[in-house]
Image (tube, rainbow over all chains, first blue to last red):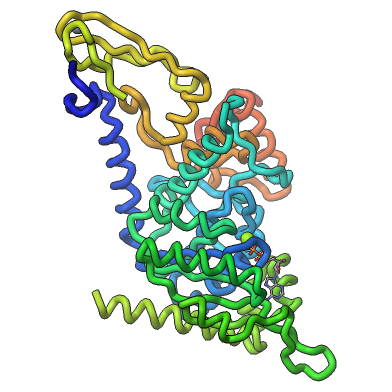
Length: 298
Length: 131
Ligand SMILES: Nc1ncnc2c1ncn2[C@@H]1O[C@H](COP(=O)(O)OP(=O)(O)O)[C@@H](O)[C@H]1O
Ligand SMILES: [Mg+2]
Ligand SMILES: [Zn+2]
């Protein structure tokens, strides 16, 4: 009796062909994107999205064409942070037209698709035996559509804000035809250090260029004397060296960052001359430098 | 997944999908090219959803790919998307009535189960209001 491998094709459904055509659409779309960068974190609440939004703005301030894809399907916040909340995504000839924020940044996020009553993401689904399996599949499919069906146009950088957790990166990586770099955001606490190591390991094992670590909330400015003070019990440089990754920059705690995020104004655009503003601009300079180095290497 | 006619030791070929594309189950019929025997693959709602969420269709696609189709179809609390043409038409309406018109058009579209607001949907609303 014949077995699975004895039979060529799948009897006419051509599932392999369907998948190949979908991948070809993705490749065609991403061909106009020079660099896709994933921003990840080991834990939630470390400021990954705030860093993504401000790095995007800082790169745009340097004249780059920027897209931001919010891959945090269940905790989207990019529309809010980049001031495009309430904008509608429209259907054009070549796909979905993204929202356009300050400095021409193009944004796609789940919060632009949800009804405006702030309800959580809810999928129309039968009660499955294993809801998490199904959820994982539909979330991956949604991400795929965000990349493939959005009219991104020509971009210098597409920044992808991942949900928290080092295990998210391999999932994104398997969808993309190309991932040009990863940035890990963390806070300088021992607990965070542990999960950061896992994020770094996941980039290394997938052979994705790790651009470096952004240490957020690294310090706060003393309201009396203005000197930076550590916000967490710092593990010191020894802890950082054990990471096996370079530090791209350190962002101090600044309440104006949180306020700007809530108001949808990129902090770095409004407060470029602050310590945090300069830190974001400096990170952006390094990221654009890396890109130029990469192009020369091609 | 492949099907084999054991009697003929022959791979079965896809014949047709019996259910509509939007039902919560699907039935795919396969037939043996040698003896003509037919069998149907019946998928429960959960299997049907899983296959759809992979963005593939058993038997091949019958409709062309639509942007964000899966998200728009499966997201229970999604906003209706407007085509650029419909959006431009709306922009020509005086600003103070625009929100009211938008709501009215969206209600009309939802009542009829449309997944997007096109210029044709706006025509329908217009004629239903006798304008
Ligand atoms: N350096 C900072 N200084 C002050 N507030 C910050 C800073 N970084 C982030 N925040 C605020 O902390 C909260 C969590 O940040 P967020 O970017 O949403 O975290 P994550 O995406 O990692 O879950 C937000 O309210 C954000 O505005
Ligand atoms: Mg976030
Ligand atoms: Zn047979």
